[in-house]
Image 1 (tube, one colour):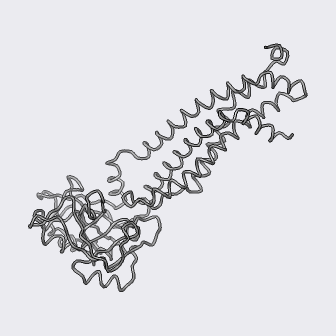
Image 2: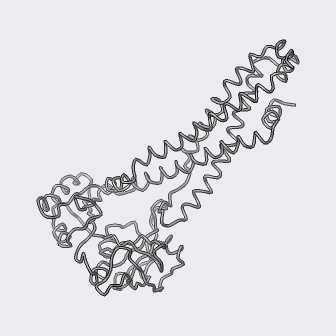
Image 3: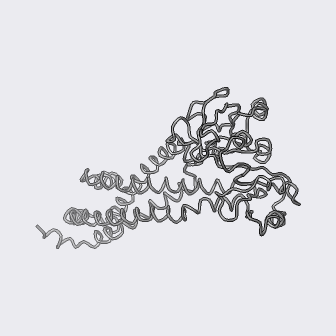
Length: 385
């Protein structure tokens, strides 16, 4: 019998206890894998935004609107190469529980500014020509089984028409993807003019503007020029990079990185205490067994290595199973359009970190029991009943 077999048999000496410990560790690494993927996905969305793309929104809060007249004035601002605008629509399909992420946009300029949106040219032309046309992200189209040519009523949870209706009849004229699989395609866009013309209130207002400067070095000058136009007006503006805007949007939910780290840390701390205590008890139960091993010629360092290896094997088994479950969980979450996190996956760096934690976790939980096992006095242990 080699050492590995001996370690494995010792670990599963009490199968129920071993399985429960593995499940506990598996749960901790499942949490770690999913939360690390979520944190990375949020960061990926921010990091991929072009450095020369700016967002101009209401200075009080980005959810408040601005006059559409601002759009024409910004187009002439020095350093602005291109500009578009968008507004929150807060859509739903058939029932309000079927939330649809939707924006009313100036379609032609929006497709120029967001050049990463990809669609067949014939669909692009039909989209620009049709007043009731919408562009649907591929993931959202898959969720609701929409295809080009479909017509359906799109409801809004916040906007109503002058006739009291909250429904805009729309036609799917284009289905778009993106150049990067990390960018979400879980939303749709409708023409601003079609949305705006029948509003009961807040007509001729826009949500935010998106500007291209052509060079990140021009950003500060453009920001000063744009915000300077509307300083001391009834609706002042605040212009930032798109990355900063996205970071501020996520910031309203709190410090996501800190929250995720705290949850994962709390899970590991709890499991560490449970596994460490259990390993101490397991070694205590085998005092006489280890004393016999010493009488058979097993040196103390070898017994120390056996117990430590047992703990590390336990950690690796639970950790690998946890990461495998995290991969499946990430795939499931990525399929939920409302969450908009297609980049949810374990990266090589996360895997390396996870394996380092497994080893460290195994050493921490096994070190004290291994030292105790190494120090067992053979005469005293064999003399115990």
